[in-house]
Length: 387
Image 1: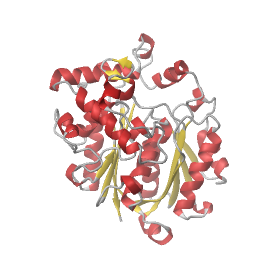
Image 2 (image 1 turned 60 degrees about the vertical axis):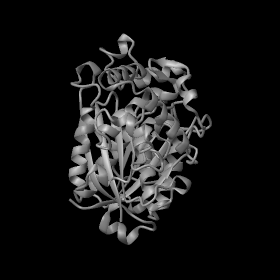
Image 3 (image 1 turned 90 degrees about the vertical axis):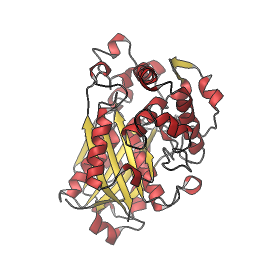
Image 4 (image 1 turned 180 degrees about the vertical axis):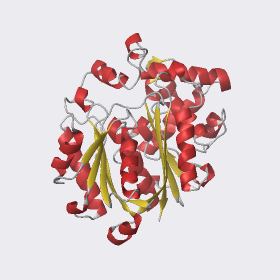
C-alpha cells in the first residue's frame, strides 16, 4: 500500500451554535482544511463525509453531495459514513484506504453534527439509536446508564475509580481552557465533579461528554505527492485499526475490557510497527470519565486495573508521560458526534506540527486517536507520525 499523509486540517468552534446551520458548519471547516492544505479544489478527487443523525435531528440526509455542493467540489464521488460516535474515524479510514490502494491521490474527509437546537428528550432519543433499540433503549437504557453499569462493574473488579474519574474530568477541562475551539473552557474542581447533578450512579453531569454543534475536515494525500504540494508539515498515517463487538452491553464478554478497542489497537500498532510506549500523546474517546480509564488500559498505556493509579499520578496530564486529550476531549472540547473522530485527528496533527501553543506536548513525535461508537460496538484507532 502507498503511504498516506494529512496535509490540511480545519474545524469550527464547538458549542451551542444557535445561529449556525449544517451548511455553514460544513463550509467553514471544509474551506479551512482546503486552504490549510494549499491545494486547488480541482485536485480533490473524492469526499468522505461522516454524520451520525442529521436525518433525525435536522431532517437532512445525503450528506456527501450536500458537502460537495457547499464546498464547490463539482461532480466528484462522495460517500457518507455512519458508525455512531465513530463515524468520523470510519470516514477517515476509508479515505486513507482509497489513497493507499492507488484509487485516489488527494481526498477530503469531513464530519459534522448539529444537535443543540433540539429538546433534551429528542437529543437523547436520537443518541439512543446507537444502542440496541429493542433490547436497551426501549427498556429505558440510556448511554449514561449503560456506562454507569460499566463504572460499577469496574469498581467491583478493581476497586472504586471515583477519584480517578474525577481527575479525568478536571484534567480535560484544564486542557480545554487552552483550546480556543473548545465548547466548555471552564476550570472545574474535584468538588464540582463529585457534587455535580447526579445522572446515573456514580456518574454526575461532570462525568459526561457534551451535546455539541460543530464540524471538522482534513485533507489526505499520497505521501509522495504530499511532499510536492503540501504547504505545511505533512503528517504521515502510519497505522490504522478497525474492530467491532456486540451491540448490547449484556452480550459483551467483559464490561471492563472493551474488546473493540483492544483489537483495533492491536491492528493499528502492528501496522505502524510501534508499541504503546512509543506514543507521545493520544486523543481517546472520553464519552464518560470511566471510559477514559478503560481506554488507557485497553490501549496499553496502563495495566488493566492500574488506569486510575496512572491518572492520579499525573501520567495522563499535559506534562505527564502519556498526555491524554490535550484538546479537552469530548468532555470539554465537545462531542459533535459525526465530527468527533476528525477533530481528534485535527488535534494530533496540530500537536505533531508543533502548533498547539500553550497545550503543546514537548517532543511530540507519534500521536494516536481512539474513537468509539455506541457501547464500544465499533472502534477505530489511528496512529500518526510527524515527517
